[in-house]
Amino acid sequence: MQSILFYLLLPILSGIAYLPFWFLYRLADGLFLITYYIIGYRKKVVLKNLRQAFPEKSAFEIRQIARRFYVFFCDMLLETLKMLVMSQQAMSKRVRFNHLDLAEYFAQKNQSFFIVLGHSGSWEWASPGFELQTPFHVLVIYKPLANPMMDNLVLKLRTRYGQEATSMKNTVRNILRLKDKLTITAFIGDQRPENPRDAYWTDFLGQRTDFMQGTEKLAQKFNRPVVFAAISRPRRGHYVIDFELISENPQATAEGEITEQFVRKLEQQIRQNPELWLWSHNRWKHTQLEKTATSETQ
Image (cartoon, rainbow, N blue to C red; front, side):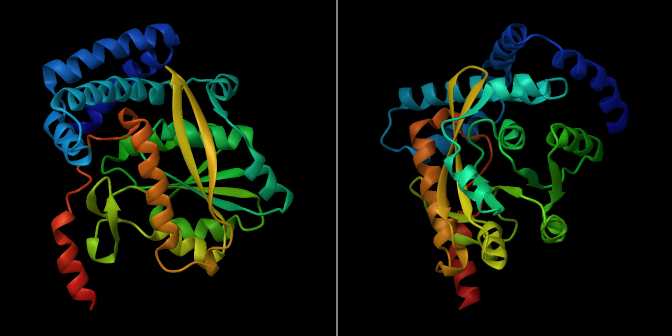
C-alpha cells in the first residue's frame, strides 16, 4: 500500500518541484495555514519544547516563535523538494558563505576535515553549498529512513549535486575509501542518540540533554579538524553559512571537549534565530534517563 501511495504521489511532488520560487512560496503559505491552524502538526511538542527552552519568554512570545517556525518549516519542506530540479547555478546563488577562509586554509594544507551542524536552517541545502563552492568532495552521514522508497528519494536529493551519502554504520569504511581525496565529512550533531547510556550529557537550552559522540570519536580516530557550520536566513529562499573552527587537532582534546563546543555554538545559533531550529522533534525524550545511564557506567 505504501508503494502504491508513493508512486501516486511522486508525479505530484515532481510537478511541485518545477514550480517557480515565487509560486512555491505561495504554496508554502497555504501549507503553513493548514499545518499550523488546521492540522496543528506536532503543535503540542513544539510549544512544550519552546516553553522549556525559553522559560523567560511570555506566552505571546512563545506563540510568535512557534508561528515563525511553522512558516520556515513549510518553506524548508518545499525548498528540499525543489532540489529535484534545481540547477547548480541556482543553488550556488541561494546558498552563500560569509567567508571561506577556513576551507581555503585546509585546502592549502591538503587536509580533509569534518563539519558538524544542527537541524537549524536548511541543512539539506548546506551540503550542496559545500560541494559546489569549495574544492572539497562532500560525504554526508545520514540515518536511513524506515520507508525504503522515501529513503531512496531523500538519498537522491542528498547526492544530486555530486555529494556522496553514507549510512552511519558505513561511515568509517567510506572515510577510509576516500582517504586520498580532499573531503568534507558532514555530520548532523543534534540527533537524539538511540542509546542514552552511550551519550554525552550536558546542559542545552536550560535542560539536561544527551548528544551522540560519533563526530568527536571519529575526529579523534582520524585526527581530522572539526568545523561548525552556522546557518542563517537573511531572507526567504536564501541562506548564509559561517564556518567556525572547533578543533584543529582533535587528538589533543579532552573527552567531551569537541561535543561540548559544538553544543555551545549550536545553542548560540538557536538563541539568535530560534525559528530556524527543528522544534517539532522530541529532543528531550531521554532527559529522565541520565541518572540511570550514569549509574550503569560507574
